[in-house]
Image 1 (cartoon, helix red, strand yellow):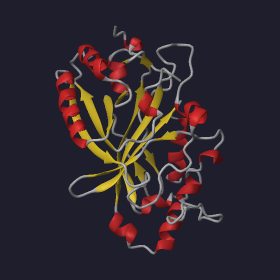
Image 2 (cartoon, rainbow, N blue to C red):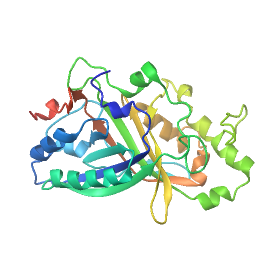
Image 3 (cartoon, rainbow, N blue to C red):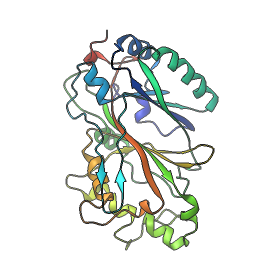
Amino acid sequence: MSAVQPGILQPVPTVARHLIFTHALDSNPLEQLRRLQEVADGESLVVGLGQSLLAHLGCEIKGMQDMPVLSGSAVEIPSTPASLWIWLRGEERGDLVVQTLELKQRLAGAFTLRDVVDCFKYRDSRDLSGYVDGTENPEGEKAERAALLSSNIDALDGSSFASVQQWLHNLDHFHGLPPSEQDNIMGRRRSDNEEFDEAPESAHVKRSAQESFSPEAFMLRRSLPWNDATQEGLMFVSFGKSFDAFNAIMARMVGMDDGITDGLFRFTQPINGAFFWCPPMKGTRLNLDLLKIS
């Protein structure tokens, strides 16, 4: 689908940087968004708009919402809404730092940079736990059907809803577990990535099996590990034609369906999370026609 921001469908990059912005309630951010539109190619720089910003601009996107807070028997999924998400994708971390400085200047006067998370590809797209991430991602046309809106409205067609969560790992605890117990948490063997025929009901593969939902809960994941000086984890990113698949999977993971909590929560948990609407492209520029930006 040519209208999509191409970075959504492309493989994960070598390095990435997530920029999370808030906006000033007394500002008129149209000029800053025009400046962003000039450099957002949708490939090296993917853009998502939060519900608060859309509401501020009087733009209603059907299906757009804030990420819900979910509580299970032992875990809670936080919601930390934001105005603007920019996903920088590249090969050199220094390039992303330079891009960040330029973007802060372009957005100054209306947007404040709240969070920066640097990410990287680890081996053959593995999580820092050592397990392959995104094994059952849809591909090709199936990925497009799962990730993109199909509409007769040009400014919506090819857009996508993004779910962005930062997960914090306790790898000391995880690696202190016997290897067989680690495999049972995932429901896969780390050695060959094969799924167990009889994985525990708490195994992540059972909690999140996209085809086991009704309707099926397929989404396109583009997650990468992150770290700073003292911590590490996974920056979870998924794209969907709606938020239904993400919400259904998260509800099952926290045990809202049957009281069984996903084994992942034994060593990792989300520390923030937000939903964004990723506009389509119009030629080489972001299509922001719904925001009345010419």
